[in-house]
Image 1 (cartoon, rainbow, N blue to C red):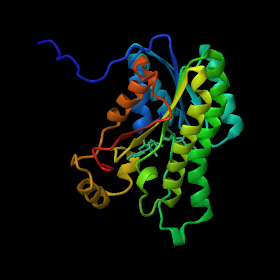
Image 2 (image 1 turned 60 degrees about the vertical axis):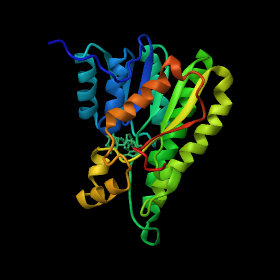
Image 3 (image 1 turned 135 degrees about the horizontal axis):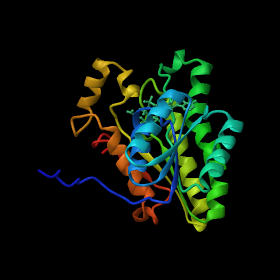
Length: 256
Ligand code: NAP
């Protein structure tokens, strides 16, 4: 029997070049695979080269094209060099997904300076560094899509995540401003706020917290990384051309 036709979003990004930070696992891996399946050449960015290579191999095995660029996204020189290397290797940059992120959860009175600085650097400074580098390329091209991974924690806060919530709320303000700056050059800039998504990051919280969280999700389940990847495909597609400066919440109703 023939496979049932997919009812998931399918877009044609052939000829386009996409860059995904945090592509080595979790949501970023799903985004990289989805962009690859859609025909884009995908530049996969993270620190763990072996895991990145496995993702790139999977894209190529499915008939796509990919490259691997090891980079600590908090490093300004490395971020600029990585964007330069991607443009040098592939000739252009059409879609950039700023997805890399970390948590260092603890209650405010005992939150260390390092807990604050590391989370702000990995989650917010990285978005500034990569967007600044990509914006120059996309403004010249007069086209581009920048998609920044925020979180429902940036919209409503979450006890134990003052650092993380601040970084994710910062992404939303940054996205709105840069969207206004780049709109005339046909570059869109949007944020996605995932709710609770089944990845290593969620797993690290442990089963008790996950069960408790499920009670707060009207859909009654965690989201899948592929459900965030589908939102990225929509914003990256021609259908997303008139959407900019927005925050797309994908959370099973958590913030409703
Ligand atoms: P994850 O499984 O922990 O993956 C995080 C990714 O970020 C990895 O690929 C990691 O790669 C990369 N990364 C972290 N620090 C980096 C650095 N300094 N330089 C380069 N790469 C770095 O997390 P996830 O759940 O997929 O989350 C992805 C994004 O979605 C994050 O921004 C997260 O805040 C956001 N989000 C997640 C959820 C959720 O429930 N899972 C909810 C809302 C928002 P290396 O370790 O190889 O460098």
